[in-house]
Image (cartoon, rainbow, N blue to C red; front, side):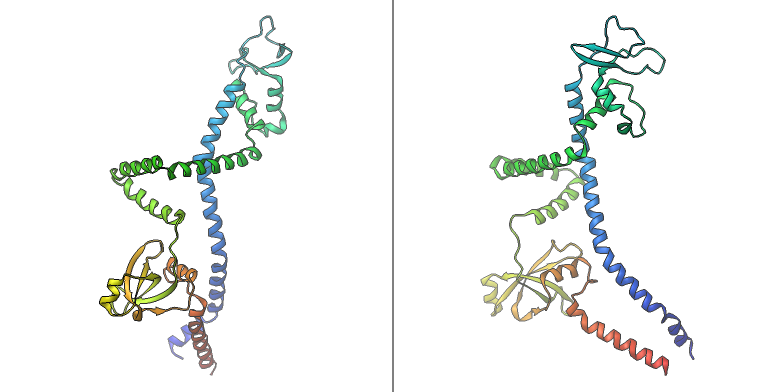
Length: 314
């Protein structure tokens, strides 16, 4: 037996395992990557939008509820509870140097903050600001309150912003901003690319693709996948002496960019795949092929493997 035959026999037991592993990876990766993308979006929004808004709201609420009580005349330094205008106040713990703390907060606030369940292992706050911030978090800024309120405010803000941008003054403001950014080196390149993507995704008008075709582009012998957008210009059809088509040639892996070409209708090869399958093919750089186009390749591979196994057994 030759070395090539023995090498082939050595790799044979690994082929089913490798094929099963790749199939399992192909099944688990799409939902996993989808989850990762949404988690990343959520983390980004939380870090750069929700947390700053939450911090500003916390400071505003602390300023609103802070009664700024700093002293109780005639109260002994060892007394930690006092009453003023019918409400109990609690003296904050002693300062790090051992001196009596002159700051007071309402007893209802202090008791809520120092509750062992609310402390969750954290040290007791020693300043009035930290006590009030912790109280605001426990009383007003819980996740059950923050998330629904933030979502409603975010949706309302986007709606009002969209209405503003639809007006003439809004369009002028956006055009002015674009002109300013276009003057900034490096930033304009990133901004332009991101704007193209967002304009394509969130545009109110959608490009209607009628079918998927294959054409020889950019030269004879090289086939490119194209999306037919409709009939092209009459003057071009007159010169070509036959009907012509407008075709978008998408680029991988971003199908929202590409080239628009006009071809003779007779030069287009209709493909038995859907628009979604064509987009998957483009995004995956040709890795993901429609099942009906892959069937012959699968049958041929199985036939070759069967014939190979038969020759080895013989």
